[in-house]
Image 1 (tube, rainbow, N blue to C red):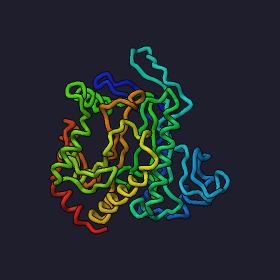
Image 2: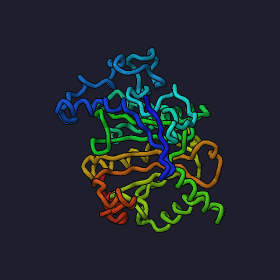
Image 3: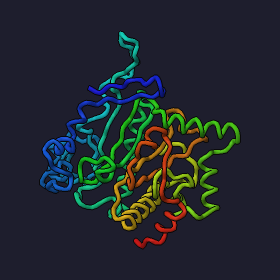
Image 4: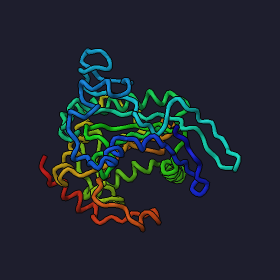
Length: 337
């Protein structure tokens, strides 16, 4: 069973999920195989016709077919090896030695992006990318109705270096009963800036980036893609809304097409320009209760995994980036897709 333990040295919570050691990738490692050596569709539980190999679906976009069978466009299932479980409670407890912990309360879902086993999100039609975004937003809004959950982290791991365990394109979400420390720090910095200036820090940064132009990759009526001034990893790319909104759940549905167009293009430029790099993608949103606050702006961050953090980064918490974002943005702007 998962459990959260409180780290008194950082004021953060650590999720312990022993069952995840049995994820497919770990089992394959034990067998001496690699992700590249796996059979393709024949062994994939996410492919159409294999629905019985996964937990029953939570949500799906379908063409009129019945649940838990073929005929879906996007499918959401519980993670078979969850980091957190919806059946647990968020009660804070203390053991007989004085250490603080709580049950592994939360939700962990997998969003299967399409029936196509081989086509990355970058190569999907805009309509399919939009369908994925609509599904992510629908699950975000639904789970935030559960008062036990304080944050929902939407993310995609692409490639082994990014932590993926199955090749079939998918993304995930984890709802947590606490606000993780990194998110608390980001939100506090943004709150302090708003209290000092009366302005949204992320809107100010976006205005500075668009004025400077050097790190802007793409822009359209509703969104801007930039490689941030202080990028932590080479080719780190953010997609930000022009109109500040604190929560991803508040994005007007009419703007998801525009977001899908931009996200597809950004991912395709990275795919072509960097030869299909491993990457992590996160949708960064505010915590529960701050959905209407003006201090924060939700955004998408894409972090290619072109280098491995080493001792200094892990010991200090500081990043070493070997590629200037201005040069990275210029390179990606010239990539033809």
